[in-house]
Every structure is written in C-alpha cells, then in structure tokens.
Amino acid sequence: MKNMLNAKTAIGAALAGSFLLGALAVGYSAAQQKNEDAPKASSSHAQLNTSFSDTQEEEIGEIVRAYLMDNPEVIIEAVEAYRLKMQMAESDRAKTAATENMALLLDPATSHVAGKNPDEATVAVIEMYDYHCGYCKRAAPLIKDVLKNDAEVKVVFRELPILREESAYAAEMALAARDNEKFVDFHFDMLDSSGVLTKERVDKMARKHGLDVAAMNKAIESGAIPSMIDANHLLAQEMGVDGTPAFIVASTDGAYVEIMMGWSEERLKEMIKEAKNAS
View 1 (cartoon, rainbow, N blue to C red):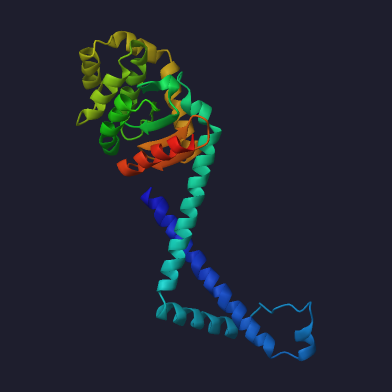
View 2: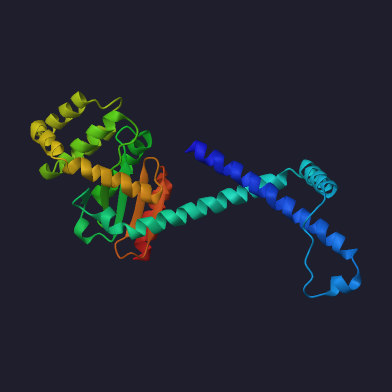
C-alpha cells in the first residue's frame, strides 16, 4: 500500500512539473506572439507558436527551475491536490463496485449474517477481515456491541485471509462453523487470541465451542468453503480492497453506500448513523 502511494506521489509531482512547464511555455509563447505583426495577431484563426528552439527551451527550463526554487510550495500543493483527486477517484470507483456487487456482498449463502434482528435491519455493515489483523481485533468490541444492542443493523462477516498462510485455515473453519450456529462465538474467540493461529490452536478452540472438527474439515475438503473465500478475494479486488479490515456500510434500500479501508471507530459509527438517516 505504501509503495502504491509513493508511486502516485511521484506521478503527481511529475504531472505538477509538467503542468507548470506547460503554463510557462504558453506564457512565453504568448509574449512572443505580441511581437508578431498586427494582421497575423488579429486573425481569429491565429495559432500560438508552441514550438521552441533549443535556446528558447533552455530559457524556459531556467525560468521553471528558478520559479520552483523560489516557490517549492507550488509542487507540494500540486502533489497534494493530485493525491486528493486520486483518492476521491479511487473512493468513487470502490463505491461503484460495491453498489454493483451489493447482492453478492449481502448474500448469506457465502457469508455469515448476524445481528439483534437481522431480518428487520435497515443497515448492513459488511466487514472483510483476517484473523491475524491487529486492526480487525481492535474493531471487534464495536462489532460485538452492534450485534448485541443495535436492532437496526446487521453485520455481514466476510473472510479475507491475506496476512498469513495460517489465516486461510482459520477462515475456512469459521465458515464451517456456520451450520452449527457457533460462528459468532468462535469468530470472536479467534479474533481475541494473540499469536499465530496454527491448525492445532484453531482445532482446539473449535472443540472448546463444541464443534466437530472432523466434520468441519470434511466440509472444507468438499471445496465449497474455499470457493466462498475465493469469491471474497474477487469482490475485494473489484472494490480495490488490498488490506484488512475493510468495511462497507449500506442502507438496505440502497440509498447509502460507503466504504472505509482500515479502522476508525469514530468513522464507522458515523457511517452507520449516515446510513440510518438515509433510509
């Protein structure tokens, strides 16, 4: 993610420099135009001369360099404006992709849906997470509170194992627990744990919740559960999600859709409130 932002910043800087060079070039050309004969200058079809000699290009380069040395904040402002523009464009693309894929994102056949009264909820919080994600663990208390206390909201749990090889097995086992109605307890038990969730640790947690590990592994081997996780990766790719957690908050009537990459308790609460007010 950091490398991507650095690349975009570099591109923005290049574009800012090019823009300034172009502006100065046109200004230089306009000045030259004033020195041309009157009939040609007064023609409505007159064209600005933007072709320069080596000497002129060198002069323009010196002007640009001197200006930037005296006003370096121009580049910083241009790069920041470019970064914000790209950020907004990415956000718009992500929301468009989420809206187009909302039926898949909400599908209970490929996720786990929970809440105080999920059938009557007017807002859906779709969370994509990895059991080894520190920020997913930080988000857990708020998600627990929503599940317990907010009848207007349902939570759609979508596995997105990306951080460790062991994350895949934990995600598969969580989905395998859905049929036993033990998903939520098992899910938060894994999120609340520290260290690496090895197969042995996950199996031990599953048995603690009364789950049949052999039957769960058989369900995983059938291929249906890994396919659900593959589908989640495709959905994430469509929305430009490249990390966890990612939250998609939507009103069930489609009036509101918003995405948050990463974790901010304040922002998630705000998004839920906005979705409620939009319904």
